[in-house]
Image (cartoon, rainbow, N blue to C red):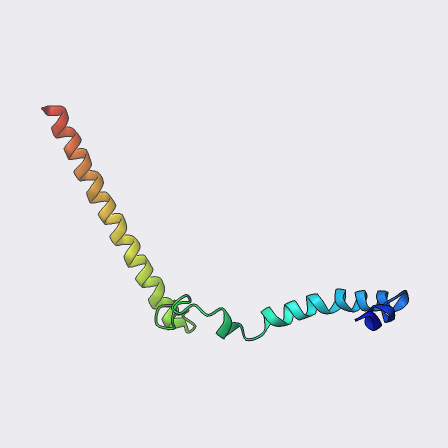
Length: 97
């Protein structure tokens, strides 16, 4: 042990410290940067292919998607309109009583 301590004096100590300063972050990044799938894997975290959205690429698919979105908007608008009418009738009935 004393042989190692005698060798690590002056410039050799500085070279050793510099090596530790350089190799420690590199080793840290290597340890946490490799084999991430096995080390930090959480099953079911990312959606599967069936659960994720499919982006339409063809013109026909885009047109079909736009038509579907417009149909859903029209249904929501109609539902909101019916709810507002029912709410207005409820308020009229409450005012009449």
